[in-house]
Amino acid sequence: MTKSALQIARAAYQPKLPKALKGAVKVQEGEATQSVADQEAIQKLFPNTYGMPLIKFVEGETKEYPAINVGVILSGGQAPGGHNVISGLFDGIKSLNKDSRLYGFILGPGGLVDHNYMELTADIVDEYRNTGGFDIIGSGRTKLEKEEQFEKGLEIIKELNIKALVIIGGDDSNTNACVLAEYYAAKQCGVQVIGCPKTIDGDLKNEMIETSFGFDTACKVYSEVIGNIQRDCNSARKYWHFIKLMGRSASHIALECALQTQPNICIVSEEVEAKNMSLDDVVTYIAQAVANRAAQGNNYGTVLIPEGLVEFIPAMKKLIAELNDLLATNKEFAMIKKSAQRDWIISKLSEENAAIYASLPEGVARQLCLDRDPHGNVQVSLIETEKLLSEMVGKKLAQWKEEGKFVGKFSAQHHFFGYEGRCAAPSNYDADYCYALGYTASMLIANGKTGYMSSVRNTTAPAEEWIAGGVPITMMMNMERRHGEMKPVIQKALVKLDGAPFKAFAAQRDQWAIETAYVYPGPIQYFGPTEVCDQPTKTLALEQAK
Ligand code: FBP
Image (cartoon, rainbow, N blue to C red; front, side, top):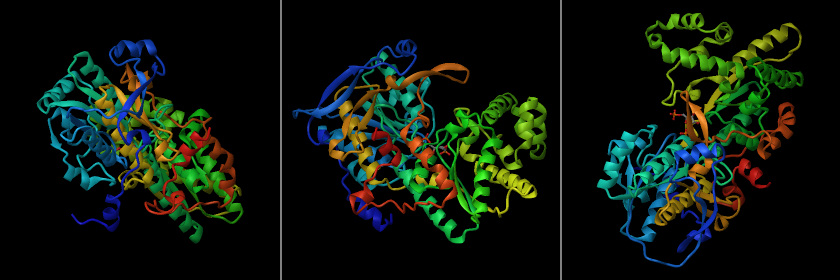
């Protein structure tokens, strides 16, 4: 395989480890824990893994560990640093006993159920150190939730003499990891399950998990290209760029990119919901900013839009909920001719929702009816919100022009940044953080823990001072309605409107809207001065500054 010069140089990078993990470790137990809400219900569902203490690793005395076999799964969307979690895990179990072995299940949780695996030897792991992507074993979105899946998994676990499984995933995958840990503990199978916090979306975080890995690198990649677009925009001075950013429901990515690049406008879905804004309110807000800049002769600008926006506009949320039910119960929809689908839907919807649906541009109306994901959700990454908004802003401005309220020109360009950031070579932050998460997972396994998520904290300090340990996954859970039933799930972290990152943004946005205050972050740097190469995200820096 031909490698780029950067890939070759980067392979030699040795990720930094917290001081406590550099030699032998011992466990320091903290307080017993409780779930964030619904304690009684969660305790009842997780009698074997509820209430366990927080764990911190501190320097210990060298002792002998038996060789262990460990399985690893990459679950869900790709996030930069997954390969480093695996290399940290590999080095960790080898440091305990050189005869330990690591097995990777292929293409996500489905690999465990289908017994599709490969041994990850030193030669293979070395090829992937500090690289982006999940291609070492691939990833998938199969949900591990049924007893027969757990039993099928157990067959291969026993055959390979696997002592512990590490599941690298987002909130849903870690919820499933916890259910699996409880199941194997209840059956006394002797199989431990450890989770690792992954997702570019940044929505798996709490008091003990500072950030999910991949958020840092993905935001830096998007901010680089947003910066480039802003420079282009400020050079030609003739376009408004509507830029949609991945992130599923939460707006963490859009907010972080706004803090890095200072665009003219950034919409935050959580605020739109809190203020009960309609689609027209959002459109008017953008159109007003366009008109204000035009009044100063500036017919150009940038707008950042989180991909989950439509689901946070209360009226759109109601429409989507009715569409979900309608499409789930009317399988014949797929058979209807494309040209007749829109009218068919309008005829079936409630009057209120039919009116909203009818007002949507053709493309977006169609996108709202595309197949749902395995969890029954609209695939927000497929909805062209950036086009929807620019089209509606254009219409409003045309109307204002007639009324003499808009004097400028409006011409839009559209972009969607998502997939291009998910497999970038991990930044130094993610390379170190992920390696430490993997290494920590190996120590949790060696110390007999199950139902824990690997946790590395204090990450705005130098890596030496990072705190490695484990958090019981049950601690992060609450009960939520899913598919009509109450289920235990890890609470999703949305943007907090009273949090430091949003407040910092809100304090500056009016100025950014009217002025051209763009910042151009440039590409991620892997070698060079620490202030250029090792900065954490602004989100994390602001949150930790508290
Ligand atoms: P995870 O939550 O699994 O980490 O996925 C993140 C994400 O990139 C979202 O931002 C996006 O909406 C989704 O995956 C896209 O999914 P897919 O890769 O299946 O198209």
